[in-house]
Length: 167
Image (cartoon, rainbow, N blue to C red):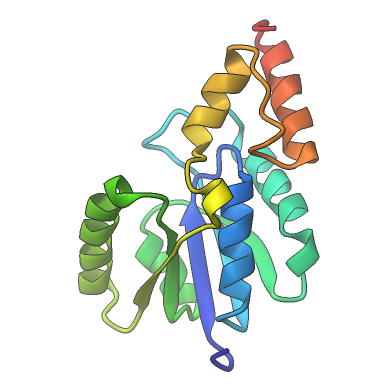
């Protein structure tokens, strides 16, 4: 593990999945501090509010609370990373289809933050196909999501679906 290196793991986490949790666990093995940066997500229509996503993320990373914090951000990710002293940005890759977008994003981030490295981590095989988008869709259509999210997130999803009248 690199000593005193802060890594930022940004995303909308709408909701946080077991794949995200696995990437956080892997990041804690490489970096002394990991900040899970929950994006306000102005460009995306989120199912959960920013505060709900932060709370779910905090619950999910509780086993790593000595190394991991959860914060929200809006605006340029660059400003958030620089303000926190981040030296690495963690990005999860599930499949080859993610790589093209993530590679372009890493190049843009390198231009904006030359001193910050992007590190790609892949989740365990059993989580590689999970995406928040799929989890939301399955939950909204009444399917079971317990294999993809923690029990706490599963409860939050069920409550959200009920509140929207989509049982």
